[in-house]
Length: 498
Image (cartoon, rainbow, N blue to C red; front, side):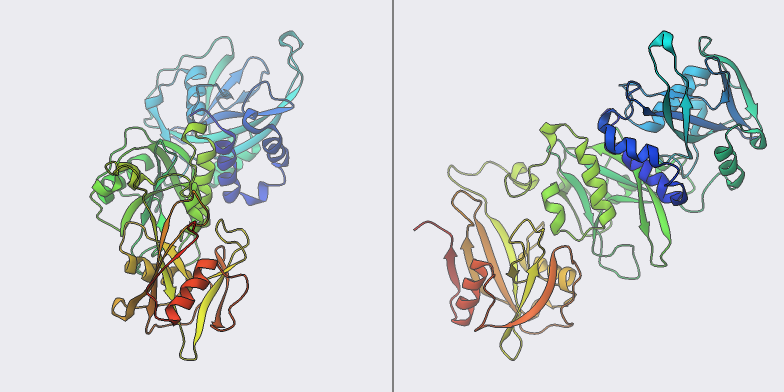
């Protein structure tokens, strides 16, 4: 997909995460991003637009410069983006080859800077009345590359724009901000740690997520939905090699086209912020057919599903940013209005059959007869600011496994399978024409822990209520189910027309 506002915004955000002290000096760029939208990279956007540059360092530590004929200045190679450019580092490489003739295979991204600019420079461009161009600004996103060999590489300068080509030592680099960063660049060319993840999407606008094992203290983000990926190993030449190796090892998955999309920052158990290079790729397969060697499962999720998952906010935001750049035809319409990928991959149902959503609900009653309810978040897609029992949709799992997972993820409650019994089933719909739902209510005879707010974006309060004085703003089928449970009735219906 061509350069989008969100791709550029994500790239700038990743840069500022590394250089937060530059936020003020990049204020004009941030204002332009908010104002210009998807046109921020167009050369016709005034009073300023984004350009791309390539900072190339050879094995001797020299930095490539070109003499621009129009301005007479000695600068790093770079220029305007083109409509065919799909991501920013590629635009920088295209400009490098155009201005110097250096083959693309002669350079590689500097480790750790595959998707994040090494420097951002804002400079004024003089007016060119002959071209009808007024004075304006360039917001130059400059990416760092290294030359593979100290031997001479073929150089063919662009005669109409470039007057000469120079290799300068770092202390002679013309840009002060760039010179300062290069002087601080560690001499080692390989980082001690580096990570890469895959943002995999399909033609329905769904995203492939990986449910990690629940081993606190042993793995990162235990029990959370995340992207496939992992850490760089010595044999990986680039982080793209890292992500491809991880996809093959973790899931036996091979994707033809992977393109850099952005950088996600995560914190480890020690509180250290770790950059993760994210590569995006399209795949339309069935995750149930993959050979998963780590974690619990893989599943497709629409954007409307993300709010109910235990997922890092940075990962959720990354998915949403990517989705805004997809064609409208691929945009997800959400799990409430269309079948899931599992349903679409199944054989056609008999005429008139409608697939039902299955939900697992926890009926938690203390010895004093009070029942646990949670107050749903005001922004919740379902029943906002309304009390409800702890519940969740069944994924690629059985209902009791779903119940135990949701209890742990949402409230920190630990329940054993043998302590669970089915006490009620309610077959309900919200209104005529909606998808039917089968609500399974399970009683936990015993449990460990006290309810705590593990997902405050979904539930804002846990409280045990007297079953004879339940709150007025209680989900209607939940009120009905509680009454049925206390009267020993196993099955009921709600919402169906008479």
